[in-house]
Figure 1 (cartoon, each protein chain N blue to C red):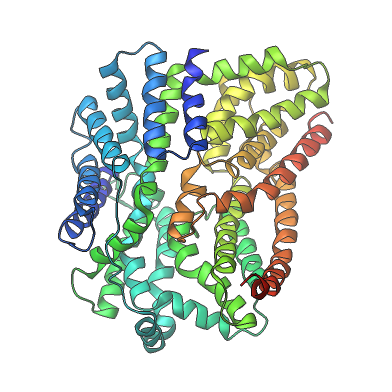
Figure 2: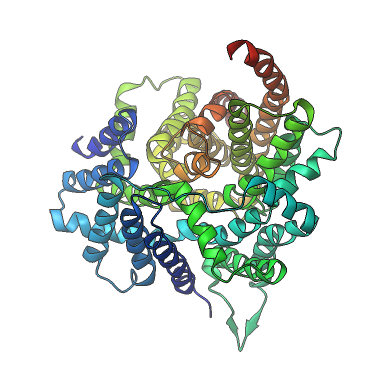
Length: 227
Length: 317
């Protein structure tokens, strides 16, 4: 039971809005101590785990080139391209990205997306540009709403597309785990049974995206009265 | 052969550059904090593989202390004004998309091609890490293309990286920190304790209740761990295999596939999955760090309900 202390610390820390880096570090050290490691052993275990997880940070290598292109007007260009499309709305731009992202992820092309590479420089400005095109200058709250939706589309389409591809990490993990327990399944079986959920995800989230344009209109109609 | 270690050196050089630009920026009142934070982070990339575990541990703690005492700051924005960027966008037109779209395309191309190319029987890159290495190579190619095209000052890329990285702040390191926390949870056996609790407290003699417990358990435990991969072995060994498969005769492939996707519903709802949910709020400059999670929660809950029904109908066919 004592080993659950880390979970308690994380929940309390997030609720009290303390610095998450501090919360996670304290939770990690406390969990290690609770499992019987000495103080120096815990610090070493934490250091080792941090170093072996460095691959998570490789994605930041895109920042120099993305920053350079932003400086040269990449976001403005993305907005201008969408402004040329009469039919474009924030909902439709995000729907199109959702479909492309989910289908390519299902084909194993999970790296055709991501927040630093695609959402910040291209997708969010395009969705904002489409809304600007319809309604003119947008209040910050509407911009924030569109951006948060753009980030969510990338996540949801990725999560519920990638499991249809047989060589993705989660399928391999499932197969490995079941093998260890004496149950042998083919990756293709696992991938096929990911399809019903993928279809549900597409239907549910796209229906919500269609409502986004309406929400934006409602928020814009409310706006002047509030000000 | 290009290995992950080389990519770490490249990342270390970038973070070191960011630290130096921060150090020279007198417009940032906390420039020394930023310098220390990114400087130490650079050391973990440049030398982390050769340092003792204990030394690395103290480096990480030093970063956390710097970030949580007085915190990190931001220099004045030194990028172009909106008018300048719009003029530049008109000048370059759609050519601006070439380096940006080259990143995902070259990454995908790399993951496919590197598996087929070998020089003297040796692969060109470490095939176990082919995606990450392809991404790094793609960013270098894109950067070189951008530099040739735009001809900015030589130091512009590192100054721009500094601008974006300072906008993200400490959140850039959070995903890695959470991965480390997950490793410590695994050492301490947190998972077994949780599935033991679930077995003791929930009535598990009805197949639908078992399916619902397994799916909801995957989502909740994923929210705690920030990662469905950590939750899957625990919940499947604790509830899935003994009850759904052995007791009620369910199909293991269907259970496992939909169980993992129930975990992904949890990923959408937790700040612990920082790289998906917290980092984008920083990248998109949203004032509410839970803004992305709030958008995702309705979809995640509806989809979790759909998963429970799907598993209930499909697994016992």
